[in-house]
Image 1 (cartoon, rainbow, N blue to C red):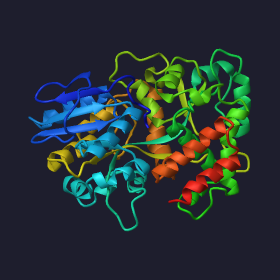
Image 2 (cartoon, rainbow, N blue to C red):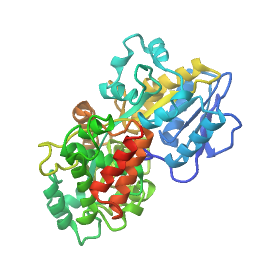
Image 3 (cartoon, rainbow, N blue to C red):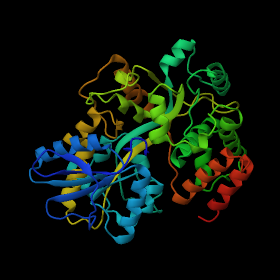
Amino acid sequence: MKLKRSLAGVATVITALGVTACAGGAAPVESGNASGDAITFRSWSPIEQTTRQMIDAFQAENEGAKIDATIFNYPEYLVDLQSRASSNTMPDVLGLQPGALTQQYRENLMPLQDCAAETWGDDWQSKFYPIGIEQARMGNPEGDDNFYSLPILTQTVNLWANSEIFDDAGLSVPKTWDELVQTTEDLSGGDAAPFLLPAKDSWLRNVVFLQIANNVSPGTVYEAEDGTTKWTDPAIVKAFEYWGKLFSDGIAQDGAIGLDAYPSAVNQFEAGNAAMIPLGAWWIQQSDPTKSDIPPLSEGMSGYEPFLFPTIPGGAAESQFVGGIDVSLGISKNTANPELACKVLTDFIAGSAAQKLVNTMNDVPAVTGLAPEKFTSEKQEQIWNLFVDEWLPQVKWSRYFESPKLDQAVADALAAIATGDATPQEAAESVQAVQDTL
């Protein structure tokens, strides 16, 4: 996402072969596929430190296995993946997201249902949160019931508040659009940005828009995506309008379209320089109990409060839950060792490696029954349980589009509104023009 948890700077290579995994500078590889007892893993998530722990756990139970893992920033990962697909050097196991990203590389991927059934039994789908199974096949051609990726992490997309700033101001998090406007005004003039919007990133523009769109008219945007409704439907135009109001009404900071989420915006938020920011459940990873050096606001999640995007006038009475799969994993159809690749993938999702992943609170697990072995504060545990027990089971609306072209078209339309280069109606028409070509 995300993108969201990616490392700053260059990619990192992690290798496990009978010794503790170590990190270093990224090294070129001649082929994406390993052989024998070696597997290549490429992704933007989990972050390098977490991936190292996962490899250690896997290696402890699989002596002699080698995982050559490279963790990128999300934008660099997309470039690397495209290059590898073009040169037929896909990694054995790779990070994906449902819908557009998985469909872009579907022809390079191995169906995973046999791997899952051999590992977990014929009822393997029951291990996962329903939204993960539902989204795993997003965008598959009609009649294609294969699973080309399986979720490793799930999430909600939502807003986060700096609870210290809100407490000091005597304010509560906004639940309606009017409250959001008033809260932004009340917090203006201080040292912190009231609403920090990192609108440079297309993924973030789209997830904010999908929260707005579903709060305006639940589900209508997906009807436009499948062609049963036009993108120029008044409800969707209204959603584009309220996205624009974030800029025109002074809710977002000046220059929002030039601010990236990672690392710039999140560093500002973690430093206490913003009162609100749109991110998602994955932000709990900032309080990773396995880390020794945690900023004060993130320690035990002491300085944060998650909340849903406020309701829109004339829209749904309650804020809608948007989210689903954060990260999924796939296997190259050309892997030289499909059995070991399957073992790595399933262990990362629901085995010893998965427990290490969950212990770092990298995000909410995709399978039920996994929880961190340690919480560092009551608030941290309360937020975790809020996501796992209350919010995630209610997620009905996807944070993804199925088509790569449509995903980009919406992101471009939102950018045009933000810069004043398109009206909401024009933005909707531009997306419909792309829809008409699909």
